[in-house]
Amino acid sequence: ESMITLARLTYRKNNLPQSRVLMQQAITLAQKLEDKTHLSNAYAAMSSLNNLTGESKQALDYAFKSEAAAQKTMDKALIARRQVGLSGLYSTSVGDYTKAMEWALKGEKNAEEANDLNALAQAWSAIATIFTNIGDQPNAIAYYKKALDANKKLGNRNLEFNLLNRIGEMYRLTGRYPEAIKAYEEGLSKTQLPYNTELTESNLADVYVRTGNLPMAFKYGFKSLYGAQKINDAEGEEWIDGVMARAYLKLKKPDSAIYYAANGYGKANRTAT
Image 1: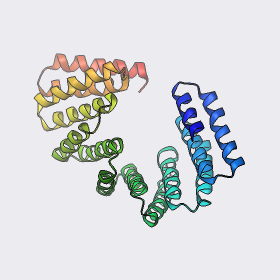
Image 2: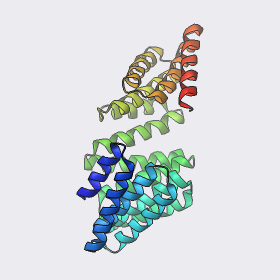
Image 3: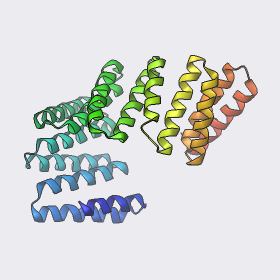
Image 4: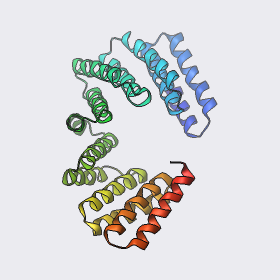
């Protein structure tokens, strides 16, 4: 496990080749020790690394190896987590939602049999993501809420923020603005990470523009724009400039609207988004 952790830290320092070497060493060591749990973890870490670098085929190959190793441990909670991992890859990297759902349901079943609330929360979140991707917002919200309720017992604040943000997104995109505001505000109370704060405040600004509450729209718009600039989030600035342009348009200030629209367009060209 320490070698896997070191490999992840090495990747974060932008040393991808050395990170791969360390991951492979972790795999080799687990194979020599015939430790299927550590082997499953090492394969899963290598899968994650390949996914981060856009190598989806290799990521899927290692995810299958990770699940196969987990099966040999007879640890249903571990098996569930690996199956949820496969579901995520099929959903986000491959776009095969049928297979994604098959693996998520397998993960849910094993998590239930293991009575592992953490694995269940992961499975429900994966199922919710699939429903989101296929446009089934009611089922997406239902499963996000199931995952959120489970996570409240676990106390994982980072996962709680992510779930609240996704619930807020579902409500925002379906026009259920009071519910969106409630979810976003609760999410803000669960995080201190600058990017998470910026993201949530920008979404709140967008909701308030849509509802015509311009004082609150400007409050969160300027706060999130400052946050994006502070962490050099160019794509975030681009999105927020668009929100601000719409806010000024509703305020009947076309010059300001044009200014922010032009800013956003310029940043989009520079970041190619």
